[in-house]
Length: 279
Image 1 (cartoon, rainbow, N blue to C red):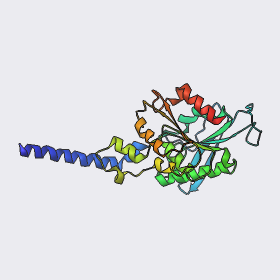
Image 2 (image 1 turned 120 degrees about the horizontal axis):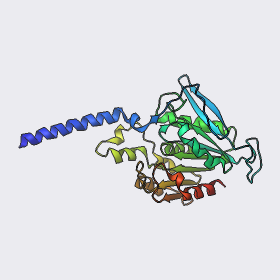
Image 3 (image 1 turned 90 degrees about the vertical axis):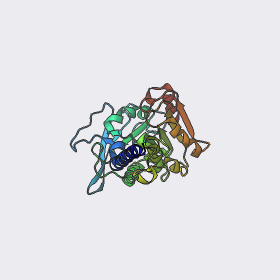
Image 4 (image 1 turned 30 degrees about the vertical axis):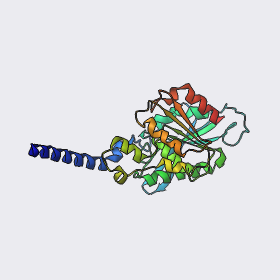
């Protein structure tokens, strides 16, 4: 009996080690799901847009799309060089799947409220190149901000993050001036997410991407608005809700009942709150 028990424990230990090694070496494959695009690929969007590239180093370029206000858009602010009544710009950090094509339909949430919206692809996503790392994601965000800040004053810049992009957006808002930070389906930290899915492994030490959103919140001085659904099957509501502990009195955590990870845009409450923030 003891020999049989020892045999099964040995088998389980071997499985544990093999799975642990696989999780360590393939964690980027689990976290990132890019769809690259050829350098000559032509975007086709119904809304007015321009494309730009930020050179970084010999192996790295950051590609972005700048969605513009329709030429007939008029809002209750003074017109400026960016368009008729342009209020400012939203820097949009998207999720971990595909590329800008997937997230472009959400641009109208901002352009209809008088904001240009710029979306950037992470390295290996879309036309962006380079080798992924947590630090490079932060470096890219800073270059993205500098490009926008050359055209828009900091109090006209809104930083927006969705899913994976929420932690990157929070890090940027913790170091650079902006009008506000808006996060859609954020996580407390990537380590906390890894613990949720791989709780039997020492992910504190093995995770290559930590992105501690909670720590960045402590250094953000502008208002923060969080949207999260109670039925989110990717980032559990309970994980995001822990961010309330590090939010300021002026910040707001908006709960979307029955909202999932990808469908908050379908809820009237999401649009009511977002529109009120952008007015």
